[in-house]
Structure formats: structure tokens, C-alpha cells
Length: 310
Image (cartoon, rainbow, N blue to C red; front, side, top):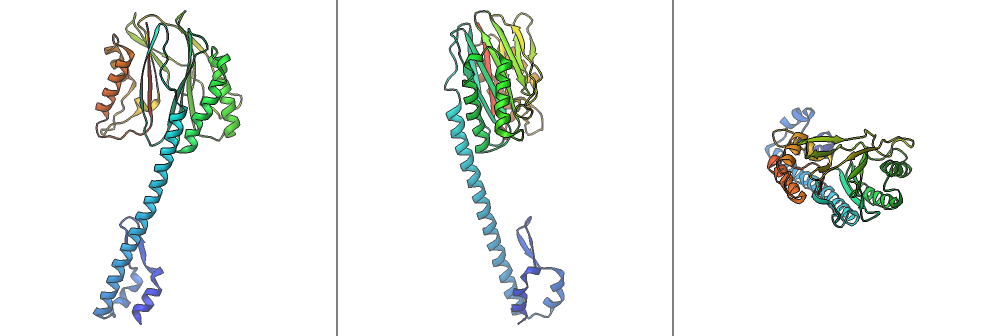
């Protein structure tokens, strides 16, 4: 009888998620002292079976969550693949190299190209925080807006402003954090026009000075303020100059010793391999990044573009 009463009152037992075991509360200690050895044995068997059941239930629940996340990531990966640029451009006086490493965790990086004329090229880099299908859909939206702006490609200010307006309309100012960098190259004049919206500044290695400049207009992230203003910059490039546009997760990645990869490391690698093709520079950056990270897991997408003026 005591055993039956105890089973009915199992709500007074505690289930510890940290250890995934059932523990009996102190209010039953005195009652358990009066139980026979046979009853105690049955209680122990019941406790073991209950633990096994709860462990199985929790494992099943976690497996369902993992499966959902896996499917979401798989679908979001397909969306990103469909919206990403098919290949790097072929341009006079410019060569390209890239590094793309999906993180499958948080964040969606996206870059794309517009070529209004044979001598001009627009490049859009974006970074969307968050995880899952909804964030991947941002890339579809960004691609649609970007390609609708081909007539305004020469104006970074207008491009960024237009994207901001569309994102604000889409999210009502309450969406994920979206940052962007837009660059417009004129290969005849070797001029670069740019605008930044919360993205890392582009790094330009100047061959004549053997040193770097950072290109930034200090704009705010996109989609939060309808009337946000964004600056526009211009710089002259020369043969041998190297421009690097990268997502923040590249330099912010931490290894197992909690060290950042860092901007200085990126600059030193580019400077060391300045005489090489941009594809080789990108490969060396990839190798250096992998060696630096070691066994540490990549936390977000890694996207990087190397552009060399010829």
C-alpha cells in the first residue's frame, strides 16, 4: 500500500536535468525507513526505469530540435547558394580572388556584383546576423534590390540608401542586424567610390607606400532608421594596389587560446604575398586562418574578396 501511495505522489519527486536523474525529496525519508526490503527494491527498480524513460525522452526531444536546425540550415544554405554570385568577374585592369567558408552557426554573409559597362563594376558585401531560413531570405531580398539598381550603380550613396529603405519597409525597423559595404570601380580611371553601413572598412594596400589605408564612411547598420544618412568616399588606385573586403567574423574569430585572428595578421599576410595573384593571396589567407584556428570551431560565415589592380 505504501508503495502505491508513493507512486501516486511522484509529483513530490525531483527530476534533475543537469544529471538526468530522479531524486526523492526529504519529506519521504522517514516514510522510506518503514518500507520492507522488497518494497525498497521495487522503488529502486522504478527509479531506474523512470530515469531511463526520461533520458530517452530528453534525447528524442533534442534529436528533433537538432533535426529541425539541420533542415533549416540545409534549406538556408540552398537559398544562399541560389542567390550568390555564380563566379568572379573578368575585368580589364582588375583580378580577383575570394575566400568563402560557411559557418553553419550564426550570421549570413553575401556578396554580389553589378557590371553596368565593360569598364565599371559594383560590388556589394552584406552581413546579416542571426540563424536560419529567415536570415537566408535576406540575401534573396538584397540581391533583388541590388540588381534593380543597375542604373544607379555608380552612386554608392544611392545604392546603400535604397537598400536601407527596402529593408526598413520589410522589417519595420525591427529586423536582424544588417551591415553592408558597397564599392564601385572604374577600371579606366582606376577610381574607387564606396559607402559603408556598419561593415568593416575595406583595406587597401598601397604598393608605393608599402602600407595600408582603411576605407570607411562610418554609416549605421541598415533597416533601423528610415531617414538614415550614409556617406560616400572616393580614392585613386594604382597598378599593384590590393583591395581586401572582408566580413568581421574573419578578423574576430577566436582560436582555442581565445586570441583574435585580427586585422594586423590579415595585413601582414597580404603584404607578405603582395606580388602574387589575388587567388593565391586568398589561398594564403585561408591557410593562415585554418592554422590559426586549429581545433577551434568557426562561429560564423567567413567571406573575403581580394582585388588587385593590374
